[in-house]
Amino acid sequence: MEQTLNPARALALQILNKTDSAGQYTNLALDAALKKSNLSAPDKALVTILVYGVTERRLTLDYMADALSSRPMETLDGTVRNLVRMGLYQLRYLDRIPAHAAVSETVSLAPRRARGFVNAVLREYTRRGHDLPFPDKASDLYRFLSVTYSIPVPLCKKLVEIFGAQRAESVMEAFGHAPPVTLRVNTLKISPEQMTSELCALGYRVHGFDAPSTALRVLDFVPSGSPQLADGQVFVQDLASQICVEALDARPDDFVIDSCACPGSKTFGTAIKMQNTGKILACDLHQSKLSLIQSGAARLGIDVIEVRERDARNFDPALAGKADRVLCDVPCSGFGVLAKKPEIRYKDLADAAALPDIQYAILENCCRYVKDGGVLVYSTCTIFPEENEHNVARFLASHPEFSAEDFAVGDIQSEGGMLTLLPDTHGTDGFFIAKLRKMH
Image (cartoon, rainbow, N blue to C red; front, side, top):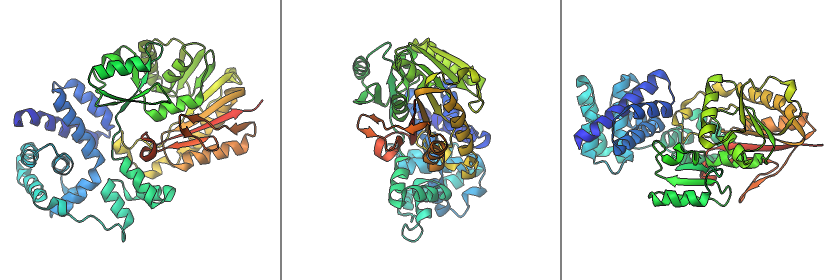
C-alpha cells in the first residue's frame, strides 16, 4: 500500500507547491501534471482529491495546525506547510484512508529535518483533533464562518451582507462540495436518450433534466480518455451555462454575436440550438484562446462559427443593428465558481473593484449590434450584485429602447428578466443571467 500511494502524495505535494509559488490555477496545474504522470486511475483520483481538498480547506487546516503546534503555520517553509495540510486533510476529511497510513505516508515525504515536526502535529491530531474548539458562532460569526468553511473573513462579511447570515452560510457550505460533471449532449450527433443509455451501459450513474434536456449530470465521470468527449458527442458544460444558452434562445438561421466567447461552451451550445445553421461570430480579446473554439467546433461537427480577435468594448460599425442575438458573458470576479476553482476564495476583493465598469462598457458597446426586436443576454459567473443586477439596472436606466424579458428553463423562473443561480438551491455554479429585448 505504501509503494502505490506514495507517488500520488508526492505528486499532490509537487502540485500544491507549484500553485503556491507560481500562482497557477489549481485545475490547470493538476491537469498538466496528471497528463505527464504514469499513475493508475485510483492514484490520479487521490492526487485530485488531495490537491483540491487542501486548496479548498486551507484556512481550516491552518487553524487546526496552529491549535496543535507551538509553531505557527506562517513560519514554516512551503513544503512543510503543505505536508501538514495534506496530512490533516486526510485525517479530517478522508474516511477511507486509515489514520496510520495518512500519517506515515505524509511523514515519509517530509524533508529529514522536518519529519519529527510533521509526525508530532499529525499524531497530536489523532489524539485530540475532533475535539479542537472552533470559534464561537454567537460571539464571533465571521471568524466562525471563515474557519468552518475556509473562506476569508472579508468574503464572509460580503456574503452575509448580500444574503443575510443564514443564507450566506448555506451558500458557503454548498461551495465546499464540488458538483458531479455536467455534460451537454451534442444533438447534431446523438440524442440525450441514446447518450444516457451509452453512459449507463458503461456503469455511470446519470441524472437527466426535463429542461434543458441536453444536460446530463454524470457521477464519477472521468473526462480524460472519454470516447464520448473525443468523438464530439458531448462536451463539459455546467448546468448554469446551459441555462444561459436556453435564455439566449437562438433559432435556426439567426446571426448571433458571442462577444466574450472563450473557451466556447456557450458558443457551441448556441450553434447546436441553431441546428448548425445561420452564423455565429465568436469574439475574444485573446487571440491565443480562439483556437480552442476552432478545434472544439471541428470535433463537434459545427461549421457556422467564425472566430475573431476583438476587444468587446470597441465598436465595429459593420455589425451595427445586424445581430438577432448578442451574448455578453463578461469577464468577472468568478466568485460563483468556488466549488470548481477553490483558490478564487482567497482573491483580494479589491481586485474586483474595477470590473463593473469594464462589464458595463462591454454591455454599452455590444447593445449597438442588436437589431430591433432582437435579444441581448448579459451573464457572469459571480454572485456579487455590483457585477450583476446593479449593472443591468444602470444599463436599463440609460437605454429605454431595451426592456427586461422574463424567461423560464424548466421550473427555474427569472424575476424581472434576471436570474441568480446558486449552488445550494440549484446545484449549479453561482451564475447570473439577464435577458433584455430591444423594442421595435
